[in-house]
Length: 163
Ligand code: PNS
Image (tube, rainbow, N blue to C red; front, side):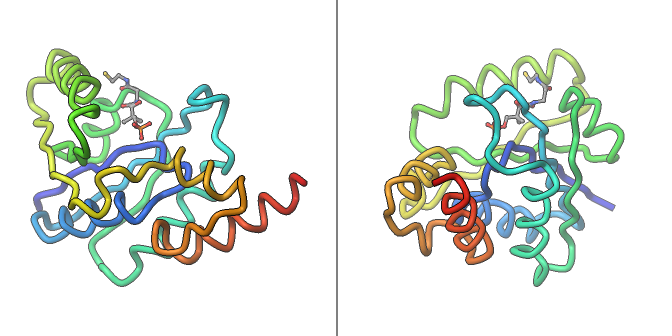
């Protein structure tokens, strides 16, 4: 079975992430979406790892070959554990390239048996990010269409709580 890993922090998953997961799921027998705990990223995620996994499970339920797993280890170790031969990342604008290039090189250095592969974002999502979504929502803007509906509702509820 050809299995690939789509890793990220996904705080929260966006329509851009989903587009990459959907396209990757058409290329591999199974996709493992690896949700990193990332406790230190950007002051700490606003959603727990269980919530982040849950949103992706709901949004990918129709695909049939996507499983979602949290992880808190080196990415290559998690890929080995999941028996995934490839790491799939999305690339948006050129600004992503330097960071992704560095991670791909380091991951190759750590484990040469795992390939990092990139899927280009579609133009509609090229400037979409989880942090932009949170900022728009925090200021009362609409994020409908930028994230799956389940995230839209969870963001509204979370922001209401914090007022
Ligand atoms: O969505 P993100 O935050 O850009 O995802 C980054 C992620 C989770 C893929 C990256 O931080 C990662 O691989 N973390 C696991 C720890 C690790 O292996 N670090 C070394 C990579 S060079």
